[in-house]
Image 1 (cartoon, helix red, strand yellow):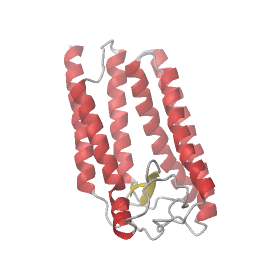
Image 2 (tube, rainbow, N blue to C red):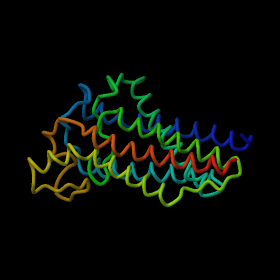
Image 3 (cartoon, rainbow, N blue to C red):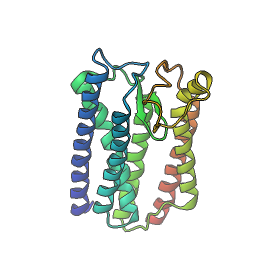
Image 4 (spheres, helix red, strand yellow):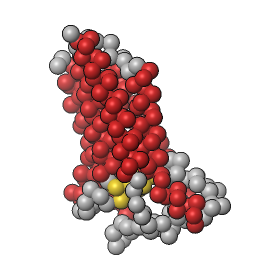
Length: 239
């Protein structure tokens, strides 16, 4: 591996770990305020000002990850690989620091709020970690082939599989919460931004019942299939 690429990966790792700690720090503060006895479901409603701040913080996080990838990468392959890698490292260390600082999650099957846009995503901690592992594997292949001088772009079939698998995984994360809202508050707004309600107000009785592991597995396997196709195709070019 070229020295310049190694240096870039080291700095991306450090940047992502630092971002993970900042994310953890914010969550620790929020839990001290809203969950002084420890985080658990049902969720406590959050005031609109804090809710908007949280959603914009998530948007800012994505901009930072995209920005560092664009600045560090020299071409489209590197930029996408660096984004995947940075995102995955950030997410992994977010949970690592949470466990170190407050002993949470208790297990990999502990439920968590994963994202808020456009509606809350919920699922066991293990599920996003599986996806982050896949992101690191794909990013690693992309960086490896690009470093070999191969034009390692993702082709149309692989993009289709990646996007399809990702959509299915996201559906698995909003499945349980959406079902709860439809059954208990059919007239409520699904959207995180609301001019009438505080965040989680319509779902303040929501307690996760079951994660759709089958749907998640289908999505994750489709993503894995895309990674396999990508690796096999570019290995042939390598020879």
